[in-house]
Image (cartoon, rainbow, N blue to C red):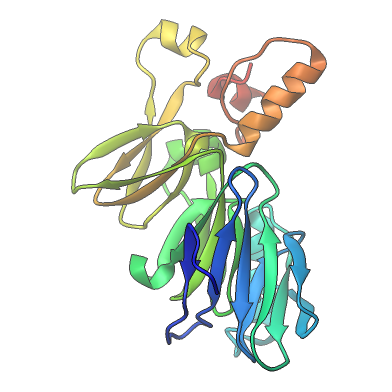
Length: 276
């Protein structure tokens, strides 16, 4: 496969180690090249095109191919996906012919597709609940709850997150421009809860209240922001989809509005989070 801004040539591993290339700027798609017998798993609705020798099968659960869990294992995988707001089905694309074959998946919103090899991160990545786009078969898609009470109640987008586990490649979709930060042990970073796209499990994630009454009431950024403490890696997105959708709804209604993300508390959460 030709080289590009993001491209990769496969090497042996437990998961199918796929070749890929990411194309485009603001509206990106990932083109995956499969050898005979190799498979890729994608979120429902992400498919763009494929070569005819690639079979497309819809499966119950995350399609990781863990194998021995039977129906209950698949049911548990589907339940985890349902909790994160995703479809209980995924689509598996398997190359049944000879030679090379390609399949492409696109992000549903303007932004960046980030390719990550989970083996390079210790096998786990925590990301926002709607971030998963596609992966090599063998990667497990689960759920990560925030353990702290304050984070659970007021974390908005950060309350329930996806946990991607395995050793293969995953492709996660981020809104707008993406920034990667690596934090040293004890180093802290403050991020808008909606702009926190992903982080490694070694990062300590908590909420911190905005200081100052005027900042809370008139700042338009919400009462809380995410406090991230190293060591580990953090990925920040400049335009989360909830913010983009909120601005579009406000413009359509012809009214002004503040920035900020939604909350699990509904209207009260919007007030706390800066939406009202």
